[in-house]
Image: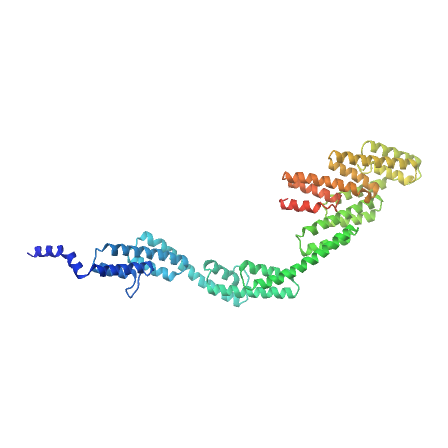
Length: 478
């Protein structure tokens, strides 16, 4: 009989529960739970959270499908919120959501990665507190920019981990404000280099610092003034160079380089001044004014020892010494004169106009001139020398043999004393060197292009095409 009664109760369980708790009331509770879930209110102590509402339905109807699936959704939402809280650095919320998910039997495979990341973040949080304390201590002691233990470096380390850390943000702000104040003081003292360095450190640490625009604006004005002064100095130096004052030009170029070692225009100007001094040394050597030549060459060598023009002047000075040493002690010796003329003509026929030193046509003509400077045969031999040198230059230039053309131009220069009468030939040869440099640049042969440019510069330092090509070569990586 008891068994029969139990069976009857079991059969009538659902109808009785439905009778005692109307469907409309359960549906309202399910709807409220789903709304709480949608708002992210997963659990509240007052019973208004999604978990508590779904659980209240389960308590009245253990098999209610919507309530059971709702609890699963709450558990999944707790995991999602835990991950988001860890990512956002809200570790307290992350811990609460992990505890909620665990209490709802979330799988360990879902919980463990979140708990591991949470543990790491909690360790980092403790480390951040330690670093902030170190930063405050360092700042109070005046250790501002030392690395790694300076206050600024420590604040920046914290901000890399927690970009919104208010203490680190304020510490960085106050330190950078101090650096900007130092930059202002440096500008007041006329030390623009120090101000530039200080502003650069601020930009590196916080490019959006509120104090930067005002200081940068003032620094821009100072830089504009510095650039104007630089341009005036540069133009004055170039004018000195054009007017034949290479020493004054070199001094100005060196001052520009001392202020800015990367000033390409000043560097090229210094090389041009060295070239001018080397050419002057060559002219002085041709006049046997060895003391002046050696002084000019020493100045050129001090400016640019590896410049081709300097090396050429060294060879000309050596050759002039050899020629002077070969001159006879008795200038009126007719036999010595005839021998010098004969050897000069033989050297001209062999093409040895200025090389080898001591045995060239030029050297023999110098010996003859020292014996009988007004002799008709000397004038005839000199005229022949001039014709051969000019013909040599034209032939070699026409054949695009630029190195040989340079030697022929040198042969002309010793007779012309390097004067303005050769300006046209210098320009033509320099233009050919630049054309060759263009070809090498087009083929990406930067080393050859650079050497050709240097050759053009040594021949014709005032050539207007030099700077444009040099800039193109630099831009191409040469």
